[in-house]
Image (cartoon, rainbow, N blue to C red; front, side, top):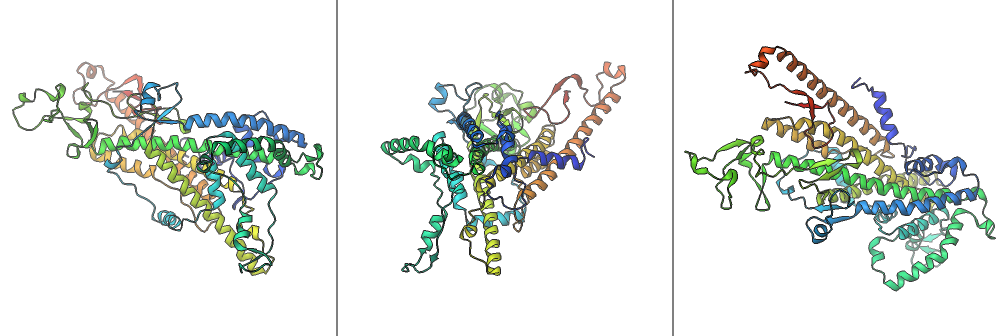
Length: 568
């Protein structure tokens, strides 16, 4: 037992945090009936605080009402997510005139990660996982439909996103039938292979770039056609033709719940992506702090320079050309040609020295990074990390989808059963559910990493020995770049993520327990050595400095994750 939590408690906690993940052991497939998708739909409705419940969906009219409520909230939530994604360039005229980046403006500033060339600590990667990911990147075999769904998540227009999702749901609910095919392009007895696969992958999800290339007149025509077909497409998906004079669809096959599920999944994926960006940006900021400390990076003339030879000790008097008074003056009073040296902690006490470290507000997935001027910033390195993470998740998801398709093909070939082209193409795979599973697992994994990182980072703030700080910085860097241990031969990756979450959380609980116990022992020791009044009167020469129990402080720039420390 560690910090009052057993292994079973940790496993139960990790399971609750992955409540919205698919329960299947393999790749999730499409579930169109309400009884199949009820659990995940209810979870998403509760997450977005929508006053609807799946037990109330008894008729197609109830599903139509649910779809109406979800459609209205879709635009509101989508707009809030776009405001979170809005970034202005740090130091630009728009940011200066509008005073953007400050609290209350709701806009963060994109800032250049100019410290990256000075990184001294290199992460240690797991060789087997590195080999697996490298192999996937070399093959670069991406699932086209999965890639289109990812592009759809980057749309900035709610109407275009809703229409794209409607077309996706329509192709899932009513897939086109595929006829026989032939490998001979001159044969007239069947379709060619290109036509066959084109008919299979008929989902039309247009990316934002392609939409931006359309002319204004074509967009106007598309919007007019969209308004005319809105009612028809919605009622067709919802299974309400029988109420509008187009009978033939039974009420048990109504699709209002499924389309609402598609909308809510889409919003949830975008929300998880924004949360990942916040946490990746926080980790980049921590990496920036480590770089400034271990590599002795200083700001001179608006540029960063490496003072590696002065690591641990800073020059109080540096005979530079642009030296201006302050602590850089009166160097003639020293009798030796060597500059007067002071320790880093003393050097930062001078008023001429600017604090270059960031500080943070919020907790967990909502952590926000602020620079020394108090502006909310997002480093461009964090944006690149998010793009690389998205590409890696695409490769992982494509690998498991293609592995499933190959196994199905081998099973059908060995059994000499009828060839199912939809099965070969993996059209029964619910790719949106796969994306949601991966982003939910990855977000929870990064959050657990950040909790473990905070324990080490807070301990790092109390380390004064230069060699120990470098060793602690190496541990923190390894945690930042840690990746889950995925099994390439497994059917799916959710179980691997779950096991990795348990390991990280147990590690965090163990480290927190050890550090809290060390803080308590140090406090008890100080109470014992300072218990006599005569030592207080003589200032306790030779004893460790005493602390003030009333004043609680934290050195990590945010809320303390360990026991609060006191001013010495």
